[in-house]
Length: 290
Image (cartoon, rainbow, N blue to C red; front, side, top):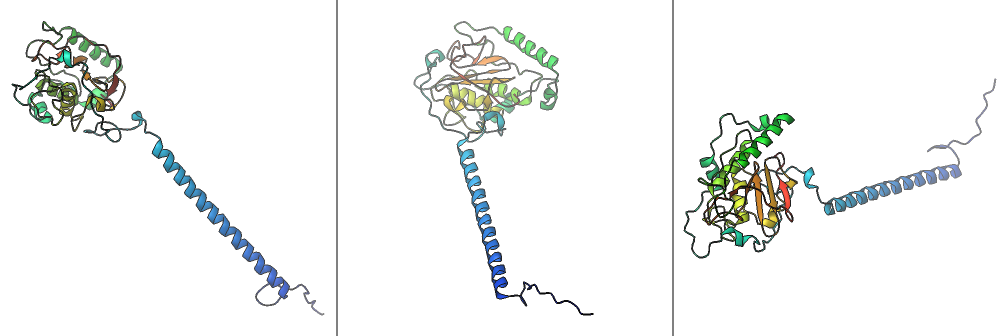
């Protein structure tokens, strides 16, 4: 029995007609060219997307509420330098001209440790964070009652006594240290620009005063102008500390009590004051969690 012989030419390295071999080579070359083109397009598209995303990120500001600032930082992101204009509240701050006859302050950290005496039973940061809403409301009402109990010295709104605010209980330690730092310079005279070059000075203007107190709590690493404090922390009022600032003036509320250079009762009267002021025209800032 005879075996039929296949008459179709084979395509391969051996055997087959030249015409079929040429067609196979052209097909392979075409496929290679297509694959190379696809690879180039993919690489170019990826590069284009990466470049576009980088440009978008570069021109898209990071929302303040989306970033977590580090202790000692002015605000989420890079600290911006803002020149301070003349304090419009200077005339109400009993400014001192000429020589200042007052001892220099200690560094904020030293002042905080010297003045800081934790109240018995003061809650830790973690304990405060776990408080229920009802307990928080009770504390707010208690702080409001404490403010009402403060008496102003004649001639202004400064609190009397030694001008120091009692260290509040049941607040985070950082807030207690801010109060302690504020107490350390509460009766220092006002001089425009005081406390700007260094935390250690013998007179403080509005931003110098607020910067010193915040630094005592570890919330600021260098003095800032009123304009720079407009971007301190994150937007909105805080539970314990609220800083209000514009280009020319700044003040704050700590545990519900006003700390301000304007409106005091005299040259050496306390920066802690009774009552509230009109907050219109000020940027409101607080530290996350405080």
